[in-house]
Image 1 (tube, rainbow, N blue to C red):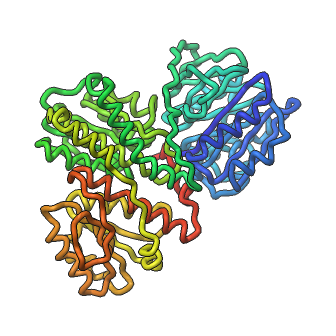
Image 2: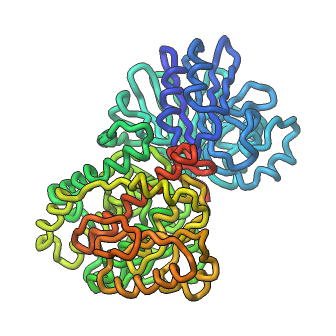
Image 3: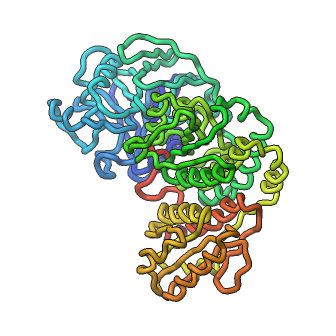
Length: 573
C-alpha cells in the first residue's frame, strides 16, 4: 500500500514530488502530503482530499529537498494528524513510510516524547531521532530495533536517507538531482537507469551522489538497471480509468499474443522436465485467474491445484519438488504472495511469476517470469490485467502440452475478432434497484461468477456472492425471494442443461434471473455473448460483467477508480 517519493535537486523539487505522488496515488488515496526544507526548517503540507488539492496548496512552495507520501491507512483513522509525512517531536526529522511496524507499541513505551498521531510511522521517526550518529547511522540503527516492513525516506538538516525491508523502493539519478520512489513508473521521462534496493539496504542521496549501505552500515556497490519500457499507454480517453482499461482489453490481448509469438519468453524459461503438477498461488482477482489457469492445465492432462496466498504458508501443504509453483500478481508486490514465494524458494521449489510489472519484487524472487504486457493499470479494480492473466495462462497451458503451434491461428483469430461489450443500459435500469445479487455458473463459468461478484463488491459496495449453480439447493436457495437478482453465466456446453435446471429452481422461488450466455435461450432475460472457442469465453463473458459493476457504481454516484478502503498494490499482510 502507500506510495513514497523523495527528491534532492538543484532546482525546485516540490513540483517533481507532487507529480510523482499523482502517479503513485493508486497505492493509496486516504490522504497525501509532502515535507520540504525551507530556510533550514522543515515545512509540511498535507491534504485529506487528493493530490490535486495538495498541488494547489503547494504551487507557490519551493525547495530542493522534498519527501512525499500518499496513504492507505493501516494504523489510525483518516485524519490530518495521521497523514504523512510525520515529524519527530523536535520537528528536526521528517519521515514517510510504507509498511507496518509490528512492535510499534513496545517501541513507543520506551520513547520519552509526545506523540501527535495514532500511527506506527510516527513511532519510527522518533525512534530514529533517539539514535546517535549521522542520519544514515541513526536510520540503520533504528531499523535493527524494528519488527515489520518498511520503505522509508527521511530528511534531517539537508540530508536525505532512504531504506527498505520487504516494501519496494528504487533510487536513481536524473537530470538535476536524485530521486527515490515506490514505483519505477514515477521515473518515466526523467530516468534511464535506476537502482533496486534489496531488503535491509539503505542509501544516502545527495544531488550528485548516491551511496549504498548494508544493514551493518558498510558501504556497498550496486549495479544500475536499465529502465524497462513500462510506459506503453493504451489509454482510450474516458472519464474514468476503469472504463478506459476495460476498453483497452482487446488492444492488450493482441499485444500480449504478439509479444509471446515474437519474443523469447518461453525459451528463456528454466522449467523442470515433464511437469506433472502445477500449483498456483495468488490473492483476490489474481486468485480467480489462477483458478482459471488450473482448469486449462487440467484440460492438458496436468494435475493442478490453486491456493489463496494468505492461507498457503500457514497450512500443511505437502510440497512436491517436481512440481511448478506459479505465483500470480498484477503488481508483483502482493505481500502474501511474495511471502509464499520466499518460503518455497528457501525449500528449493521450482518457481514462476506471472506479473504485469517489470522489475517487481516477485519477478526477482522467481527464476522464471511470464509477463502479461497489459500496460499500466491505474484503477484499483483490475480488468484488462485479469483478462491478460487468463489469456497468458491459456497460452502457457498450450506451450506445456506442445500444442501452441497448432493453435496459433485460433489465438490470432480470437484477438482479431474479439469485441468489447458494454452492459445494456435498459437492462441496467431494470435491475439496478436490487441489493441482493447472486452470481452463479458451473465449471469455468463459476470462476467468472467469482470475479464478477468481486468487481461489484469492490466498486459498488453491494454485498453480492458467487456460488456454483449446483450448490444453490444446498443452502443458498433459502435466501432467494422476489428481492433477489441472480446473474447466471453459461458458456460451458456440457453443463448447459444442468445450469438451466438450476435457474428454474431460482425462478420457482420468485428470483429474477439474467442469463449471460452465447447459447440461444428465449426463457430468460439474456445478455447475448459473442460466440468464440470455449476456452476464450471466460474473457468474452467477464467484459459485460465488468461493465455491469462499473455502471452500477456510476449509477450509485461512486468513483470506480478509487473504491473506499482499497488500494491497488497490497504490500502489507
